[in-house]
Image (cartoon, rainbow, N blue to C red; front, side):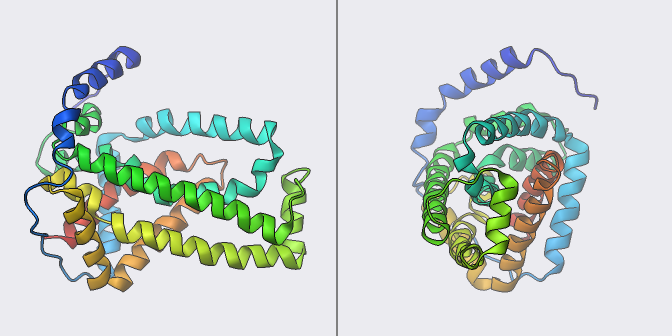
Length: 284
């Protein structure tokens, strides 16, 4: 079905206004009355490839690249402006990009809903991305989103401290000078090893609690505790597949960032749709 774009400001305001009346009701669903966790399947490595292929098919059908452009370009502009005005942000550029993996699950909730509707045989529409704010599970989404935001902020603070401990408090004079310090000094290599090790722990914490929890609360309207417990169970039952999925997501985000972050326009929506299909393969 052909899609048209009206006035984006008035349309978005309409969607947000309609969602506001549902926030109070959604907050009551944070815990939910159903405390029975869904059953978790055993998975194999083929589930990763199948999820990515299904995510690519949803991306082509839903044209969520347009949504990604709307989201990515303002972020790119803020980053570039910040780097231009404040060179002290240069050491935090890589932690910031890698931190997208922590915030990704909450940023993609609209894509999960579009994939869910398409799976049900309905024509995908961009308005469905905003419909999640009227979902009974939106309260749980907010709670888990705040947790991931706090985890992201903690990671940024720790990354800044690691840089200060290994490289000192001197502000780099530019990106090339910073890269020279990182790869040309013992302190730089210490920062790389220590940062990657600590970053892995943060990523593992985010992956364990969010690998299927966000799609689950939208699909079955369970509470946040059940969703997080199910997500942890997926990791425990399928550690190799789940860790490989997390590594795949991280690798694709790094590759997407290389061409001035333009790759995010495709990679972010594909991964969002693919996460829905990974959830469907992980949970009965």
